Image (tube, rainbow, N blue to C red; front, side, top):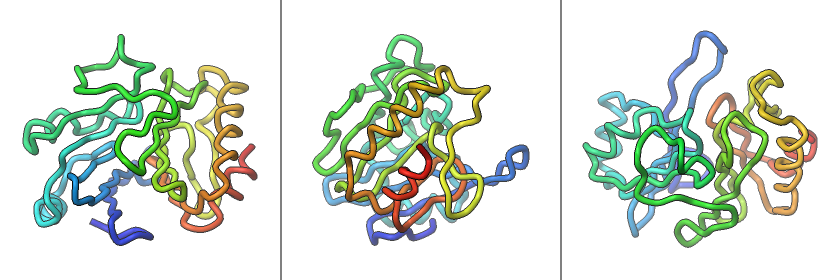
Length: 196
């Protein structure tokens, strides 16, 4: 797994040829039990690294299109799954817990619901007020800048833009770890402001 901007954060990726970008998964290592976010299938190297780091207690899925390898990893790791409450009635599998807007999932990790995307109540996650982790709505197909999901895939562009604008109240955001594309590690708040 790749080390990120904090010693407790890692990611692994798979390249999507159709979109010409990486799909990313994130691991947050913490003494109270590690958390996987939108996990992709693990290559043997990544699986060994995850085991060395203590496995995972929780898996958070930001939206149903990012369920990815969650069901298999849930069984293999004995992890519990947290999904977006906005999809509770339509999610492709049962979750152990549902996260809602401004809910602190564990100490230091805040769930934020984004509206107007492909799925209702897509989650973004704010870690220690400085690192935003996104699923589908906020992405980056070019290094150094953020973009929204393309218009044809948005359920409601005005609501999507309003959701992103609401993130600007979190002025300490420095890094934005995207589920799709290139993450940014500096001036995250400024990049979000440029996006809206």
